[in-house]
Image 1: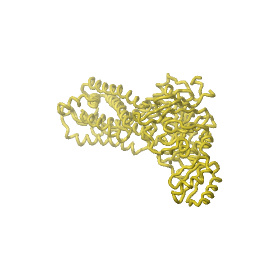
Image 2: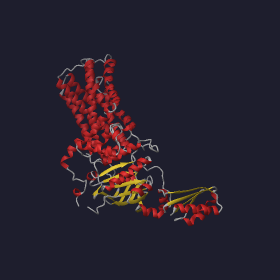
Image 3: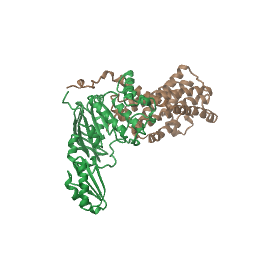
Image 4: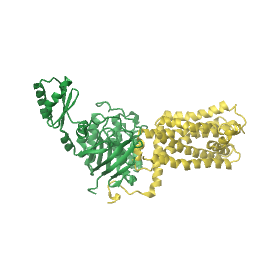
Length: 339
Length: 269
């Protein structure tokens, strides 16, 4: 058993819209049992397509994929008994109560009636939904729906879980909870494949990260090694006059781990020690007589990883036609209002 | 390394796959019926429609339509039964399209449930609903003068034929819903099927009053055949041929539509 990867993807290809959209273009990665694999990429990178193939709902055009050694095409029926699926498109039945949804999933996972009810109550308790258990989902907030969606994925206690952008559009509190729950599951031996657009999320949860762009892996490693590649902090300087930007870039360049980039009146650069680089940059710019209107230090984003890896910004255009028309749930109000 | 030794993975039990189909279909049917009961107003409105049809046809057309054997209300009731279950099955199309659009079918497809159960369950819930409508209409029908001229058993057999037909067309509408993917389009897409089949039929007027070119269609199309079968079992007259005609259409439709709908659901391109 040990050594068998929980998830193995080899040279996976998938083409949509009669060949016009190449969603996956030779995608390969592996996830070991009991670990979190973060699949990081912008909209349209092919993350959701990969998850749909791994969860047997979509057939690949080429390549192979297996869950716990079981091929997702040839042994789809067995694969379905080992996986759970949760994601940004909370797929639950609006017209039922939270409890009825979980009991239904339990019955369809072939638990006995009694076991399905018991499991539903356990999960409602665990996800703090007991008080709302009997209410129609129409009264649930976005955060509550997402919790129910996650609970639905856990009904049959599958050894492999797919979380497709589990925190996109969530309020900070629910996002934190989602992370804690994921960590708990993995501590119990579950394998999680997590797709995300947020480096912070991959950083917090993933043991291994693969960065995906245009349907193929462009980098992989531990979150630490990826961040080491791009520096730990981004320094952003805004100048009063765009004509000064090139000069300012030259002034701050020695402080960075990578050469700065210039966009209009903005100069951006990765630095190793944020606080020190920030104050040094301020002094150096002042000494050079450059008028600065803003200086910001921030954590590197997926954009920064992309910029470094591909030389282009992550495209955040609309997703290609790689899934049916699901409405995106409205974003959660920030803060705890949604509870 | 065999699949059976992996945690959480069990060898597929082929012997029980039929039981799973039954269990899973009943779970899905339960899902739709619970959803309906949770919306009491939808139950009320779906009950009003067939009742209203009975009253309207009985009193609006009842006096104007002549040339039928016996009383018009006796002639009419089997027609209204068939029309109501045919219209009632439209929600199979809407329901399947909604499921597709909301993404819950995605979850069902990733569950170890029987492949055919999502559509089977949907059509079984419609069957249950149609049974309710038919019982309501029978009750009201008796109140406005409808009488059975055969036996109670023959009447029940007539209802059974009717419901078998309604089940067959639910599969057809579910197929439409899976194909068009949007609930609004699904509903619109059913009308070109519904209207000619229910009105160019023997449901409300005798076919021999229609122009010759229409008679050939109106006589032989499924709605007329089922209406004629029900009418024979409820009001009397020769029974064997009409009943066989009705059964042949329903069974034939099931044989064609069930595999098509299941294949459309399973398709994972």
